Length: 315
Ligand code: TXA
Ligand code: MG
Image (tube, rainbow, N blue to C red; front, side, top):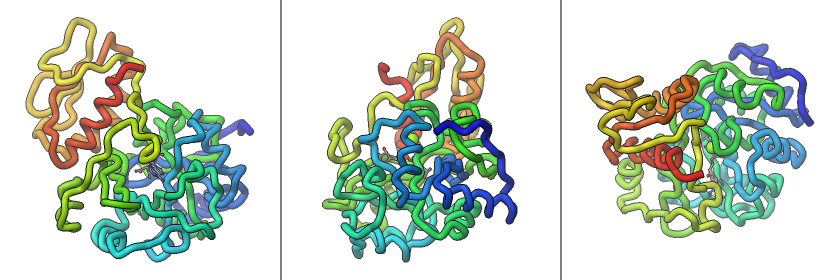
């Protein structure tokens, strides 16, 4: 199903109740979260979830994260654990996703988990995401609201550039404050970092009192969606650059001459918030290529470097 026109909804009572009504009718709403915009659908509705995959051009084997209004709801869908509770207490609501064993009586569409025995759950901190989840009153499946393989959206305009006419509505929450997706931690066995993201791995390790195991790319059973090429702008991306070649745009970090700077003062939180915004903006200039300055690989720098490596990967 292709809808003719995508509505832009404000974050007031009228906008929120319209967004909830669309979700209840099996429609798709792009909702702001603190990380990136998510493409939301009722996670119990097969047709609605199928439309997420269709609208994004996403492979069916790549499972979705279920978004909940509060941690108390998680036990309805996954086998909750003490470790999960510890992490939820420390980081929810917020940019952390937990992968836990799926409950057989979850009532979710099997498309959500791509038939895996585990489910990814998250309680977002963005006030509009929270308000929509409360108003809707059920589990919401939401991948990032971009065409599969392209740069994630941190503004309503980015969503519309990719998905206008393919989804019912965008709930306008302005720019997403964190700017990179949630950190994904697997808790089906040894706690494992499946994707670096908006919560620094070091902070999670501190709460757990142990190191996270590292997930290696390409293990299809662990994180099927972590495909190497991802977040791809139209232009070719070159990493660890100290200057731009003729025709290239330079994405800088720290004090330097460049086309756009992720953070002049070398702040990784600010750089994460600017990352997708700047990639979208540089791509719109249609340069011969995008050269990127080196970024420290600690804290949020790990999420930034993960996204940049995928943006630079052969397609
Ligand atoms: O910040 C975020 O997490 C955003 C916002 C919208 O919440 N969502 C997001 O969703 O980034 P998406 O679909 O773009 O990325 C979800 C990742 C994919 O790599 C997927 O493979 C992985 O989570 N995933 C989902 N369910 C999983 C599971 N059961 N086991 C392992 N990985 C899973
Ligand atoms: Mg995504």
